[in-house]
Image 1 (cartoon, rainbow, N blue to C red):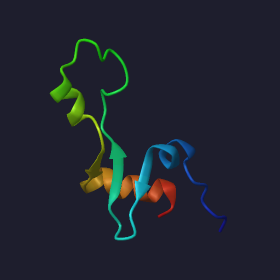
Image 2 (image 1 turned 180 degrees about the vertical axis):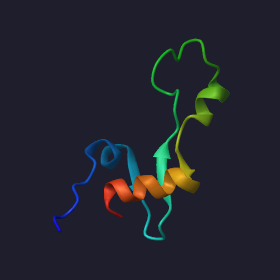
Image 3 (image 1 turned 180 degrees about the horizontal axis):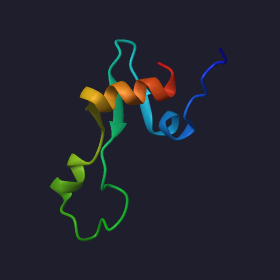
Length: 64
């Protein structure tokens, strides 16, 4: 059986920690930033953990 290819889009957007957590960037933090308050923009910084079926599907698509 052939090896599965890594999904390039998932690979660029997601990272897996050594304990198996799946982290991705929060959405809405890239453009139209003038109208957003500073406190709102701070919440978009950093990473969020994925859970459930999304986590399972992402790990499968990047081969982790």
